Image (tube, rainbow, N blue to C red):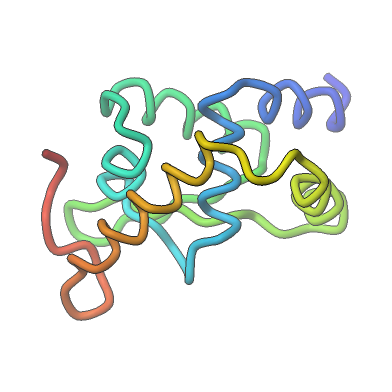
Length: 119
């Protein structure tokens, strides 16, 4: 499949777009638990969405002990795609709520890493 079509299909679903925007504002990698808590969605839904984003080569994952860490996968194409998010309507109550929950969840980090598991 065409790389651009695959990437836009992956980014074109609400939960996946919310994840991408969250990773874009994150100060580094996010644990799947942090994404689950910030989105207030079931772990299954978040994990499935992260798999789609990984398969579309928009995010990369790394295991750290029992935690899976995610961050944006940068490339010239991806960076243009991620940059287009800046043109989305602001303020959006959904994204603002995600940002507040993410900030609260990141405040619970221990030693610069996810210190607790999903709720």
